Amino acid sequence: MEIIETGIPGVVILKPRLFEDARGWFFESFSQREFEEKVRKVTFVQDNESMSSYGVIRGLHFQKPPYCQSKLVRCVEGTVLDVAVDIRRGSPTYGKHVAAVLSGDNHLQFFVPRGFAHGFAVLSEKAVFQYKCDNYYAPQSEGGISLADGSLGIDWQIPADRVITSAKDTLHPCMKDFDSPFDYNDDLYPTNR
Image (tube, rainbow, N blue to C red; front, top):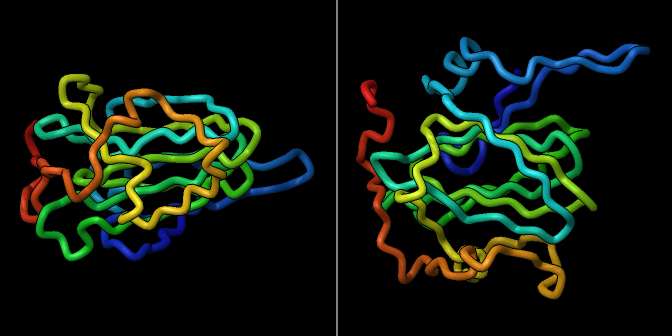
């Protein structure tokens, strides 16, 4: 796999080696050994999958410590715009975001470390989205940032009249009203959980 650096250290795009022939294609979608060698030591414990239609925007979500999560995400069918926002107080990239187009055709994956809010917008008629998490879902620890926060500068690539979100996602605060539970100097990857 090839690692593509982004504008925020630690947030990376993974491009698999694709083997194609007359039968179709094959690629290794995940290798713990290679991921740890090239990205960081992380043990994924839960896999999730969602299906959404055009215009759906999910996010910007995170889990607060001690239940924070890293995510390794990919779109297996359709196309999404995937976004990670740095919400670590004191970070030189606090409030900045990285966006990547993930699709069933490009096979790219996106690693979103702990201390980042994550969301995606569905750009195709339908999208099947998968993500690996390094901590279990903890509903009491859910948090979020407003998808509509203009200060983030995110172009979701969906016309405003076509956006579909959950009621819960419309209630998240903007960055200026947000008290982040993450600090840039925190050890967000303790060896003992």
